[in-house]
Amino acid sequence: MAAQFAAAAVLISCLIALATLASCNSEGDILYKQRQAWKDRNNVLQSWDPTLVNPCTWFHITCNNDNAVIRVDLGNAGISGPLIPDLGGLTNLQYFELYDNSLSGTIPATLGNLTKLVSLDLYGNHLTGPIPATLGAIGTLRYLRLYENKLTGAIPTSLGNLMNLQELKLQMNALSGSIPSSLGNIKTLQFLKLNENMLSGRVPLEILSLIISGNLTEINIAKNHLAGTVRSSGFRVTAIIQDKLKAA
Image (cartoon, rainbow, N blue to C red; front, side, top):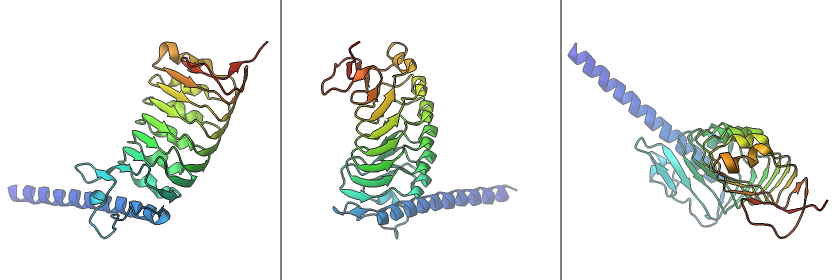
């Protein structure tokens, strides 16, 4: 009987090891497919070799003790091209740092599958299209920084579900519509930057109340089309940064 239990334990260990290896290979396949979709003028992705057992030895990739990819660090790397939908398969990813590159195309809705993500930094690129509503499903997210792109459409109301979010920086895009009141649900929010967009309507009281009842230290809504203000090049630097109030 003891021998049978020992054999079963060995079999289970082998199955777990095989499952881990398969997961690593799957993540490597996704990252290599992304490499093929990018132009890499500085050869920073040269180590992304699909013939290796897993991607944990590649430069700019960090794995956990189970050899699962938890970080992609490619900020200011000189890469260009689109983000592929397959990236949603990197389900252990915690930090996705692709800022200050020349990325183009849309943000894949599949990034909403990255339910362990802490930081999503896509700022300083040429991304277009809407902010996917699916990002509101990433409950672990603390930093969502998409500024200095060419994003359009409304700010998704689903972002109000990000109860651990500390920074929401969407400035310097072409976002339109009203500021969703659901953002007032995020009691952890410290920085809200929506300046230099095409937003209209009024700032919801639910958001303004975060200055008193939450952790919000700065709201920047200058250079939009918000009611009660006129666009200006200068602004008051206080807890609320906005355009000049319209004269009665």
